[in-house]
Image 1 (cartoon, rainbow, N blue to C red):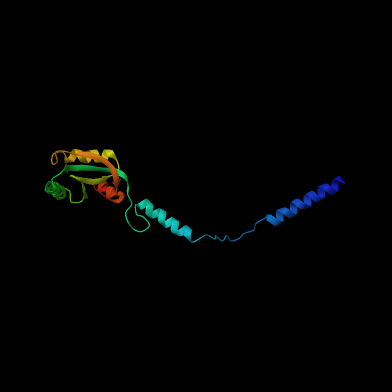
Image 2 (tube, one colour):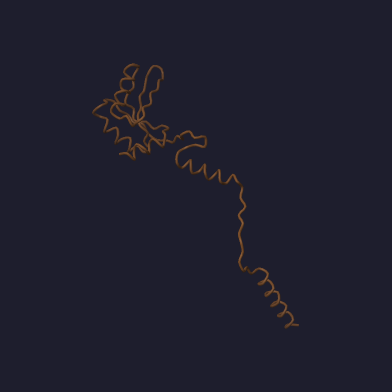
Length: 145
């Protein structure tokens, strides 16, 4: 009886080994086509572009070069800045009764502070503000420096 049990256990072991042994084969991957679109979207997000092609915004910093109620002076300061730094964008906003002119797109406060120090001679009143920025513009400007 003991020998029959051992032989039957050995036979089952041999059969299972032969049944599950792989001698070579081919793997077919079946996936949802949405996976490719999700991968493409993730790549675009990493580059800073949303799915519809518009630029994303992230938290960053801008330097304010003008604050006051005189509209002509706000535009004059904006034009002065653009003549000195044509590669940087300016952002003019109006909140009754004052105009603000902010410049640049900086990812870190240290980058904004470095640029503020560069502007001190040309613009008397400068402040750094934390706000939404365009990451592509931030990367382009800082890569050029």
